[in-house]
Length: 118
Image 1 (cartoon, rainbow, N blue to C red):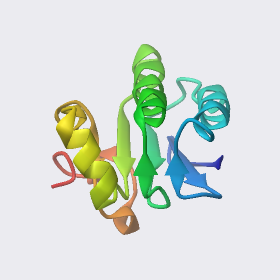
Image 2 (image 1 turned 180 degrees about the vertical axis):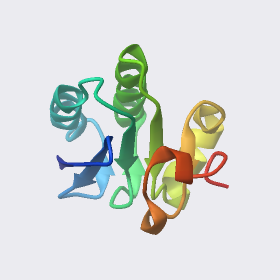
Image 3 (image 1 turned 90 degrees about the horizontal axis):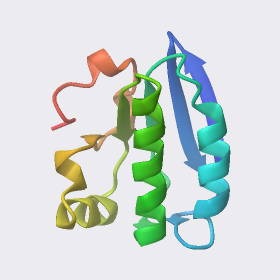
Image 4 (image 1 turned 120 degrees about the horizontal axis):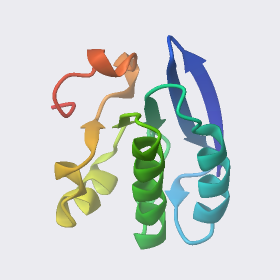
């Protein structure tokens, strides 16, 4: 898995591609790539539409990205969150901290995402 980035209207969109699992195997590279891209220049959208499975290490990466963006004064939103990933986030209550949007099709500036993507 790797991270593709696109900057549009001051919003950095990070898309996880090249695999369907953010896990012990893929998480270290994703973390390294994504954290290098977050520079505080704008809000961050993390597109998880290709991710079908996430383990504790993968969740740690997502929390880390959230914290890095926040340390730069940026907001983070997670898009395309699939049902299995969403269930894991709900179990550990990350859905109460993260801005989640389950449909990646309408991705745009964070101001257009609506309240928690629901």
